[in-house]
Image (cartoon, rainbow, N blue to C red; front, side, top):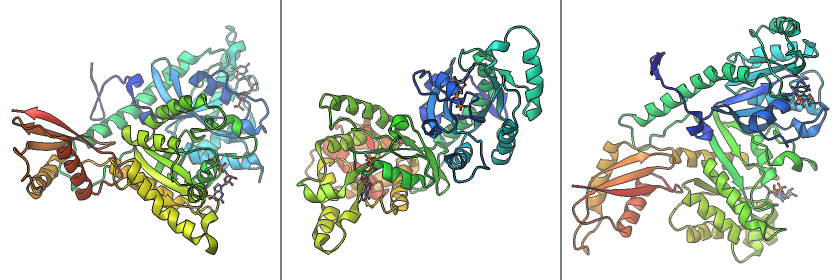
Length: 497
Ligand code: GDP
Ligand code: GDP
């Protein structure tokens, strides 16, 4: 059953099959204490997550992101900090208000919660105004929370709805985040919005897949946000770097921040592009203390690796200067795995400031030279992995790191047309010396079947299959000729008659 919508065919969307990073983002907004965290926890089904009463509580002021399940719907959900105060200046509330504005601009859908028991509060009106000003394109779903006591058949629910209607966003739905009442209504309200969004994304992907002749260096501009994982051993400076990248102190790092660190998922803009941070808390955090936990954290990191497009591995320059090797065993494992999983890899050497100064001059030079060399040795299959040297503490790492991350991502997304690949193939086959070979392989044609990472198929005719040496040669040539250094490209072969 296909329904035509705005020139596109409408198929039912199976959200359970959609990659997480393609899912739309729903933000929960509202004044403090209306139950945003409670709804967030219900949607991501993590009841044990902390819900606090006090609006001043720092723990709930971080923006949390999770993948929500509601029936067969899947979406990303953001639990905003309160929008409460453009007024109270300098306080943590003021800062979070700015953070919220920042994130809202990137959400496609909003659920606006009010507390039905309190009636319409002046701050609800402020939130409404705020939404109109900052997110004019979003028509929020207004939900009256804490409605469980009003589902008693009396007219109180209707009266409350009439009052909340004055917000001007249409008819509200009645829910109870705590008991789960009204989740069907929320489902019904969200479903068409989520489907519309998905149809745009999927059509977009299809269109890109069918793109005609493109020049070799043409880069696929995907609307899907770049997913970046920052990984590394404890104390290499991941949190410090993170704050530099976020600029606006999205993550309120402090002594008590450890509480919610694991669930923080931030995103931010860089040169007009949205970058998502996957697992900002960092891997291998536990390996130092408990030996047994090592394999566990490697497993967890594997899951996170699969979600990331680009992995930024942070190393500590001072440790490298004092050690014989640039990378510890764990770091090598992570770097190799990132490449094996087909992720883009960027290596960041942090704390370079500690090597500055005359007496340390040799260390500085040594580190700059040793790290790229060692990476090449431990990951020989991918040449040209970028290495960035920074001092996160001095706050100057943002542009070098993000430029490299975006560059890697763009190469990772590259799509080469079959026509340009076959022109390239003809040149490359004549360039290669096959003298020592008994029989030359016959590659009928060569095509890119997939991007992210670029994956190619060589259609081979005749008995002579491509050997590992042939594949290595083709990989190397592709990388050089199309400037794909640092990207784990894949070439497969198929026999044709
Ligand atoms: P937030 O500040 O908007 O994130 O609000 P919280 O999620 O922290 O909830 C504030 C208070 O309202 C907490 O005490 C919750 O237990 C309570 N609460 C949340 N949802 C409901 C609900 O559906 N019914 C009732 N009765 N209380 C709720
Ligand atoms: P994480 O455990 O990887 O998140 O590391 P943190 O960001 O918490 O940093 C660990 C320690 O290293 C802190 O004391 C930071 O101040 C310090 N640090 C982080 N980046 C730098 C840097 O670029 N230079 C120097 N000298 N110290 C840094």
